[in-house]
Length: 82
Image (cartoon, rainbow, N blue to C red; front, side):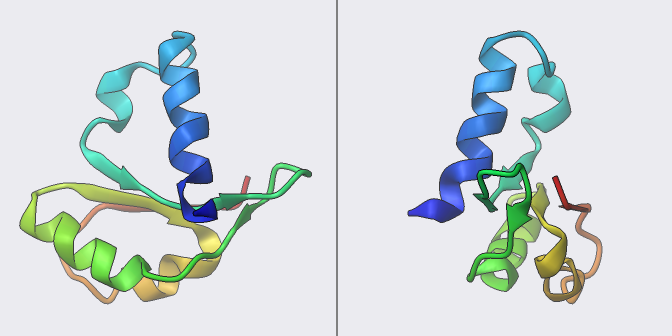
């Protein structure tokens, strides 16, 4: 689904050596990308954050989902807009 858009884009940036893999390997990444580069909210961020905590990972998600994700305490949340 479209909630993998951001993960795919970041994966491509890692493969192209734009982003070091060490910067993102400890995160679960989800979000839809709009054609104008905005990161659009998706469903399922809260359960993803719960699972991220169990796996000792953080979450990179759309800013619109950040409020939902921070319900899970002690998880690094990067809520991005574009």
